[in-house]
Length: 399
Ligand code: HCA
Ligand code: CU
Picture 1 (cartoon, helix red, strand yellow):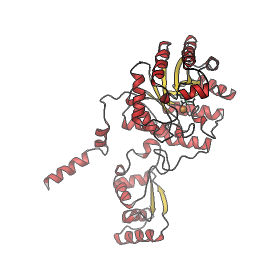
Picture 2: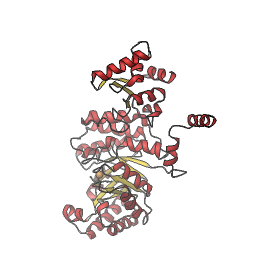
Picture 3: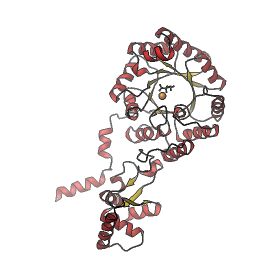
Picture 4: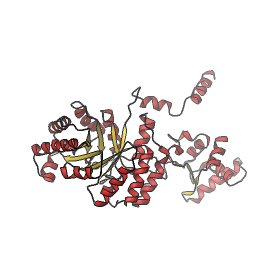
């Protein structure tokens, strides 16, 4: 009796995620992981996506207000993109605007023409890219990489260099290129898993190898072909990368790259990275991209999906009505989403009683049982969904 009451007291004092936090915590002073958002570059490589310049400018403002560190755009694509890049740079946003292009002087010139302070150049370094895409030798690639970096630096630009398809390149050549561009003065190196072929420990090893031979800040650019992009991005950070590339809703070539929502929420809540993101903008940003692309995120998409905060099974409803943290790791309002209760054949007695109280009916045990049985008999699956407004949430916490 006495022991169980001690346990009861302890269990109410401890925050719901406390023990999970103990498992997650692996550093006393977590380092800050930055975000580069590439919705305007990688995102526009998603099939069917092409923003207008007005939309590009609005997206840049939103990303900046949200708190990302860098925003990437590719002025080399078209005159429209040049205009968009120039205009976005003129806004004087807090985030760096990175002009992305190939490892060619002519692309660096376009970045300069846009008055960019920061640029990114990519060059395939795997044998398949060298032989079948670029048709150049390793020596040529090495020269081109160094010359591009030197050219950008001599024109006063910050430059990130991307060793494209680096995860499939000969590690000896990868390290040779990284060391050579470091010597040439590169400001950051992006380590991409361009075709999404690594598992998390593979990404860890890939980044560790480069981390061991250079002190240049490293970016993780990972693709989601097998669904491991978010996990791989964090594995890269464990190995020393300090900036993750994202897009809103994860749009990008093929299956895309890590979504901004998952990365920013995990950084804040699971990695305790000291960023200052306005997480409550996340669902609105996702809706904006949906409106501009007609790509609807799947309903169970983490954080921003329409089902991410729906509760359905009777046992879940019973717990949620007492304390939403029972089935919500992060409160929906923190990320701009809303809690919804689904009433249907799984609602059970507690769900039925709650539904009755919402409809102004007197709650009684027998009535609730009858309504629960009625919902089950209808065999209609989900009958209604109720988004909880402030008043209902208050009532819930007061009951
Ligand atoms: C591309 C390739 C790239 C570049 C990544 C980066 C990749 O489409 O240009 O510049 O960091 O996945 O390797 O997106
Ligand atoms: Cu990519």
